[in-house]
Each structure stands twice: as C-alpha cells, then as structure tokens.
Length: 85
Image (cartoon, rainbow, N blue to C red):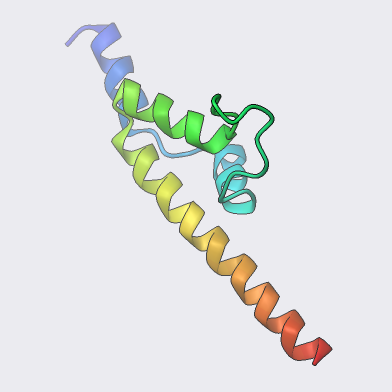
C-alpha cells in the first residue's frame, strides 16, 4: 500500500479533534443567517465537507455531539425553569 493511500485511510478513520467536537457540542444548531440563500452554519458546512471526503467516523461523531449538545441545552433550560419557578 502506498504512503498516499495509507494517509488517506488514516484521515478517513481519524476521530474528531477536541476543537471540532466542542464546536458541534456548544453550537448544535445554526443561528440567524445573514443571507438566507447561503449556508452560513459552520457545522453544516463541516458535515458537508466530511461527506465530500468520506469521513464516515467524523460524520457519526459530529451527529452524536450535536444530539448531546441539544440535550445539554434542553436540560439547562429545564433546570433554570425549575429554579426560577
């Protein structure tokens, strides 16, 4: 196997970096977009890039981190509603 193929295979199987995982966790959904015709959501563009290059592991991990981020924010809202009630 050539070095180029080995590197390609390593990149395909590489997990998300801590920075990527945190961005998917803390910003699980897109916020207001400046131009409604243009995708300005960083996470969506990253997932599209992962799909383009075939990073299946990163796509799976990014989806999981987005779900965990949504659960985190929902739980914070419930806790705050309970405390402020």
